[in-house]
Image (cartoon, rainbow, N blue to C red; front, top):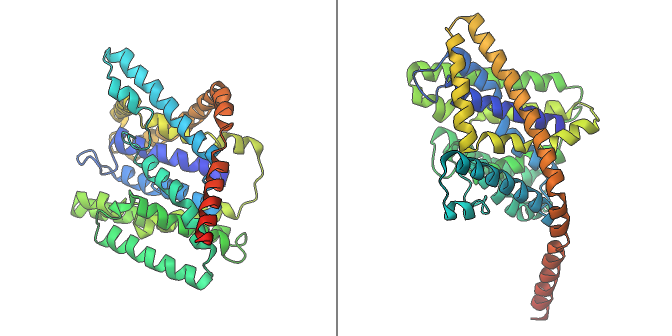
Amino acid sequence: MELLRLILMVFIVAHHFIVHGLKTAGYYGPDTTTMGLTVNSFVIVGVNGFVLISGYFGIRARWESFLRLYLMLVFYALVFFFCIWAYTGEVSPVHFLTRFLPFSHEEGYWFIGAYFLLFLLSPLLELSIKYLDRRRFLMVLGVLGFIEFYLGFFWPSSVVNRGYSLYSFIFLYYLGRYLCQYQPPDVRKRRYLYLFGYVAFSAATAGAALLFNAVKLEYTITYAFAYSSPLVVGASVCLLLFFRSLSIQSKPINWLAASVLSAYLVQEQVFFRNYIYGWIYEMREYYHDGLKDMLFVGARVGLLSVMFVITCIWLDKAREYLMRPLMKLLLRIDVDGMIRRAATRLSGAENHD
């Protein structure tokens, strides 16, 4: 699963490079290409895959988990704040202070905002799952899935917002938890079936994207590449089950995967994003719609995505080393214990009443 995390982050980075860098995946109209739509269809599973993994293992909403995420977000927010300050010479005290409020002032980090809300709700979600047998679990998934696909895909609404929402994360969390508790039999024997399922769903997404692009371009984003698309969700589930069927034990992989979120945080910072996306767009001078040219540019973007993720991971390991004393200091605050004691007192007061 940790190897899957690494691959999914490469997918997310490649998706952003194709969409916002090359601008060939239908999001910017005139620059859309067949290759861009096809490749994006296979890497669009990145976000859903991350949330499915969180549901598969379950989120443990502890002080240490919150602290690690918070310090990582604040660190990169401050680094790029000072980069902008050094580059422009302008500084806003309000903007500086909001760097310490990454969950409410995420500045494009829609994933972080939604994931933090999922983090806060995870104890309630886990409590509800505790009392669900398999039949009731399927009923809950059926209701959530109906809303996810009906309101989020066939009739896109602001509630689901094409998958860019807390609601979609809750649905995927429950789905991942179900896959963990009720795994299909003989999962290892069916690994190639799951791999075929991922390829088939992704190919169907590519076909839909090409069809929508020929009919009406805006449908490509609304339907083909929506995170709430049944095809995208199906591909994400199949990829998760395929990696679940593998038996890989590797401490280096676990060590690298622990810092993989840093690639998303670095890439989506405005200061960095504007620079690197402009640089990638310049690759289009080698792009003349010939298959050989498209494969050449695609290979460069793929290699760049891998190198980018690995570089960010190493940078984050340096960040962890620098912030270790602060982390140890803040961990002395027993927030988990405070919450347990408060809950015990409230429970005692209710029983007394």
